[in-house]
Image (cartoon, rainbow, N blue to C red; front, side, top):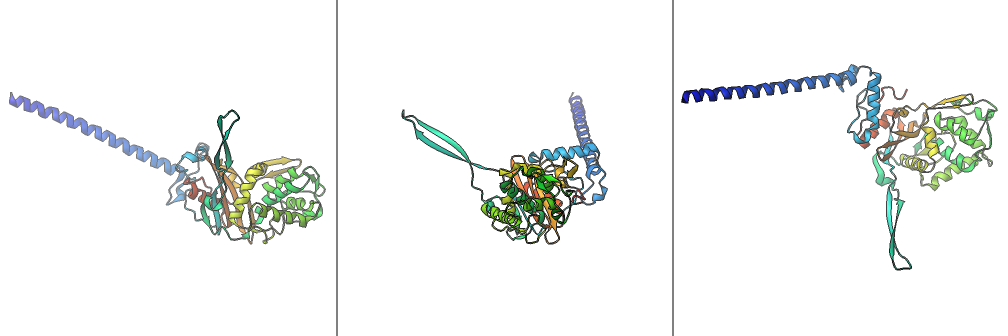
Length: 359
């Protein structure tokens, strides 16, 4: 009887051990297959960081998936790059700053004639302290040439002092300005709101000169108004010698440009909307915004610039969840990639990049 029980015990034990081993082998095989599948999928979509050349072209569905990831950036820890490779910021001066409008709660207690006390709660904007908002920065208080970033101030002053409905005629003198990105013709007439589109979308120097030369008090007065306005909002390191940005004497620093961009965002959202417009058709003209960042849903608008003395310059706005960020780069040789890398450093989100983003 004891031998029968012993044999039965050994048999049951062997069966249980066999079942446990089989379950473990099934689990191991499933894990290995899933790992190989995900590894192969990642190679097919983005290649490897060590060898980006392994990356294969993305299908339309994959491109859309990457765009969707950008829209969810606020809640994501990373966004896969279509061409993943490290980037070293080339800008000699840069700043990423949190421009989110914060409010302060003020409670006021008052006593009514009937003796009942009431409390009034008021929400007011908190004081904006630039130094407290900077997230990533480098040499951000040295005045340097800013090129066409000038045109943001040109637009503000044009709205401030010019008759918005008076016709602005394009003259031969205006067309003698370097560059003709707007495609203006002699004798054309525009209102101020109309000419702001080529000014801010395609960075038309002709448009900037047309606005300045239509100041009733003359072009010098328009430039004086530009300088007085930036001083009035606290951009004390900023100076303008012309309304276009062609002059290397037009200078500012990253901190001042963040102040200017914040003011424009809060007070002239129509100007920000123009910079975020891809194509504008007007009469015989079609103006196409060349800014590559328009491909990102988090991009709200901004302005780019370039002259040899300034290198590539830019000021850009991004909305990531509830947060509003301004990114300023000056003296860059790879503006768009610099902006994306600085946003990654500031937010922890690796934004989609393009190998030829500057082309």
